[in-house]
Length: 457
Image 1: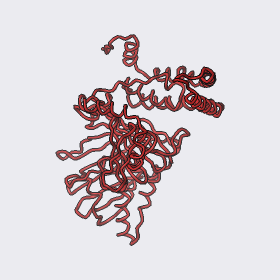
Image 2 (image 1 turned 90 degrees about the vertical axis):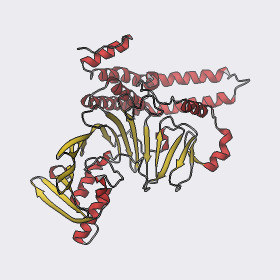
Image 3 (image 1 turned 90 degrees about the horizontal axis):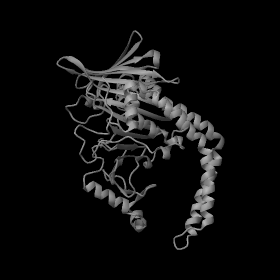
Image 4 (image 1 turned 60 degrees about the horizontal axis):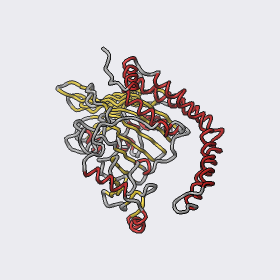
């Protein structure tokens, strides 16, 4: 929104009224022609260093989730191995009211109002990547991103071939330029920040047509060093889907996957203090009134692991319990993400892997459309029978009749889910293996045989 605020000032000076430049407004609208989204992306910094970090972004109307997944081993920073939480995911939820951040495996989270000036946990805005000449908002005077908080003296625009160039002269000197492509809804293909000696920062964006609109596929940031522009950071979109049936309609704190009894600390004292009870956020008053109801064993065990310094201190092993996910298409994403990380797929292979997932889930959805209601009814019957079973126990032993009823219902549900299981094993898994190159196949074969893989020359 910094660009919108900046350009509004420019037009106020030009036309005496507060309006966003039509072309920039059109570019912003072009990037948000959706209500829900799932985006997998990576950032490489410094460029060509091999230091690639993986990210996930979800959008559900006004709600946003960002997950920082670390590098190929899950490491969040150089030297992370051996450090407490060095290989833990960072998860951030942002909605109309608040921003909540949680480090995987922790027993506390932080929350502050969305409009707060505290920006340490602010999501990186992949939805507007390419609009700024620098990757993210920084907060110090020695950082050129402070340009966006300074008054603008003059706004101008001109055509240069098919490019519509919007420029803003800043009060303290320097300019921001946006090059908008008229053939693609005036999307920003190049953005620069310059001073009297030339360009200081540059951002160049490539786009991909998804059939409905264009969305960024790659963003490269450069900065001036010794008089030359040198690329220093690359964002690569590995998968982007929009308004799909399986996208969530909202993103609440349950997406942070906090440990039950996690303390949610209010950073700015503008919001209440909360606890996570495993299903929802509860106030301190409610926690005090219910604290004798909770099971503290898992929480205390986690405290012991934290004190021992062993929580996510080692590289991640990306495996998934196949028995748990094979019958549930909504969980296949976990299997695909683990497959990508375990076999180190390149960007092209990764895009194909997400396409394989999408096609397999579509097949599963087609089948579930015909039996979904029946499965929901059986699952509800199973839950009802389990409640009866718990209520009918004598001396801790369940009645035999109740157990048999559950077994029959589970057998019916398993039979109905068998076609889903076949899609997982006969479509999804072999299609993913088919994406591997010779070296990756050699590593997979060695992995299955239990041998230590040796790269081929």
